[in-house]
Every structure is written in structure tokens, then in C-alpha cells.
Image (cartoon, rainbow, N blue to C red; front, side):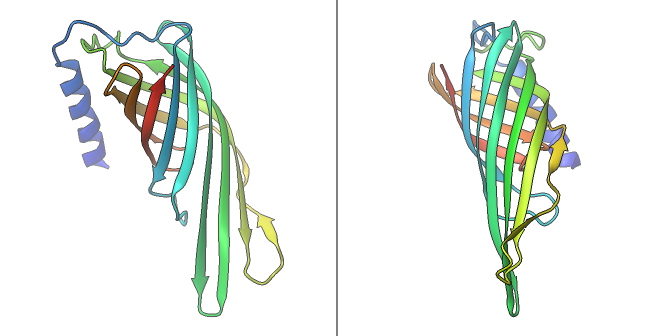
Length: 175
């Protein structure tokens, strides 16, 4: 965990020290769409998560949006097989630190936020009894992320958080 914190601080420091002539503006009307895969899992969560999120500028440095993600995996023991499915929905808000950190690049976007979500968790017990639900409910996810744009409209993103996976990686689009 200390390595992750150090890595985040190192990346923030490097991005803050880059030399360029403009900042990536996040203002009212700015739109980002992320398509990603979830890496890692909480407790017994296996499989790879797939998700989409959108952020829409409502004020300088503030966005609101939503996220939908899905994860499914099979498990088994001798004579017993089953599957677990996670379906995740969340509304979220983010603050973008570009201006506060005085980032001098128009290619990077650093942000953090909080949301309100619902996760439906179901499992098949392998005995033909159908799917049962457990662990479903409302929760408050947090996220810390960054985007780097390779062109004016397309880039990559990484997001640490408490949603369907501890790390989401993927492609981002500025509309």
C-alpha cells in the first residue's frame, strides 16, 4: 500500500513539473467518456470487470456523471461449481486538480471524487437452484484518477477506487 501511495505522489509531482504552455480546461460543458477494464478484486472477487463511465462539466473544475460496470467469474471445487455476477451502477462527482496544482500541460487531467452507487451481487450455487442474491446494496464509492491525452480527443485513463475493482484502466474520449 505504501508503494501505491508513493507512486501516486511521484506521478503527481512529475505531472506538476512538466513544461508546456496550456492547461487542460475542465469547464461547464466539458465531456469525458471512459471505457475500461477492472484489474484486481476485493475479497473473493475474481474475473475481469468491464465498465463505462461519463463525466460532464457543470462548473469550472467540477464534473458529475455516472458509471456502469459488470464482473462475472466461475468458481469450483471437487464436485461443486458455481458463478458470481456483479452489476454496478453509480452516480458520481469529481473535482479536477489541474488548475489547483497549476499543471502546465494540456494533455493531463488529475481528479478525485465520490459517488452514490448500487451493486447487485448474485451467485449460482451449482446445484440448479438458480441465482441467489447476497451482498447487494447501496454504497458510497470514492475514486482517484488521471487521464493522459495522446491526441486532442483520445487518451488513456487509470482510476483507483472502491467501485467494482480497485483499479480501472482503459481509453478515454473528450467530446
